[in-house]
Image 1 (cartoon, chains in turn green, cyan, purple, blue):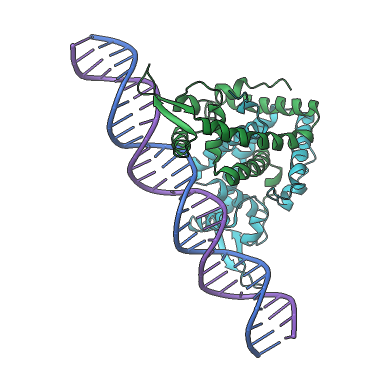
Image 2 (cartoon, rainbow over the protein chains, first blue to last red):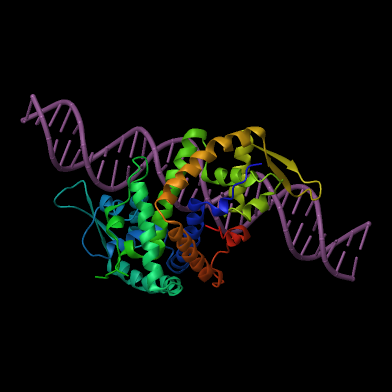
Amino acid sequence: MISFDLSSFLPYRLAVLSERISKCLSLEYARSHGISVAEWRVLVHLAHGREVSVRDIHNCVNLEKPRVSRAVTGLEKAGLARKGTSKADSRLVAISLTEQGRAVLGEILPSALEFEAKLLDALSAQELERFYEIAEKLHAVLDNDPTAPRRSVMDRSATRSA
Amino acid sequence: MISFDLSSFLPYRLAVLSERISKCLSLEYARSHGISVAEWRVLVHLAHGREVSVRDIHNCVNLEKPRVSRAVTGLEKAGLARKGTSKADSRLVAISLTEQGRAVLGEILPSALEFEAKLLDALSAQELERFYEIAEKLHAVLDNDPTAPRRSVMDRSATRSA
DNA sequence: TCAATATCATTTCATATGAAACAATATGCC
DNA sequence: GGCATATTGTTTCATATGAAATGATATTGA
């Protein structure tokens, strides 16, 4: 009779919180625009404007390469993204947003930010800062573990100043 | 040219941290015993000893019913769990661990706890307490949102006293 | 120059997933 | 008792997933 509570196990607790938040958010853009989580991440990444490759996206938004490839194809089929070939290196795909893609993101983004704001409103500025500090410490443990999956440069430098 | 950084977006940040931790942990028991995340959660839940149904598990470990059903079938095929029929209500499946299941859990659990300990070591007791406090506040926001997925009773009562 | 090797994106393949359909049993209501 | 409804667990079906294979282009080094 082993005494161990899953509900007090850190990895599980984090997973439950994250899955719940992600599902809640993704339901919104799935219903309104038929966008998947991967497509959402790619869409946002493309908003920066410069042309990027599949690998660039893969290196930034924590998605495996095949998933990025399929998300980009999906966005292209929906007319939200454009795929060209890089002049400098013809192995690379040059991906960018279409006008329609930019418009759709403009529709989705406010409700996503509103959802985030609802969460942030429950925390003080100090709590949020501490939360990110702690998250950073947990990341650092994995950074030191050679068997752990790497995190992207983007995710490493993201020290939002409250 | 929309200016918005995914890497500073709370839902994304949580997802990245959680995915990274979960993958790191699940790689261990996947390699050592061919156990999936769903099977791991079910296995742990069964360790409490009393016979439970699929619905019980579904209500406790944040897994959809088909996923629980398949995980239980998988554990049964591997000889780690046993499926009977409830005396009181023959719709219910009475699921319990086999001796072998208990033994396997006994092998997996130490390394899982060790992994958790590595994470916890990076935090002070106060930080951990604050982390859970903040997580609880975020959960509370979703609890008040009727469109958000519900969390289980188990996950609600889990206020581990440091 | 031109192999040998590396990198990039896609596709294949085997498996995982969840919503909805389903079969089986239980409960409520008359 | 017996019909209507509810609950439980599994299966179906359409889709999603990632590891590994593939095809295409670049780069390296002799």
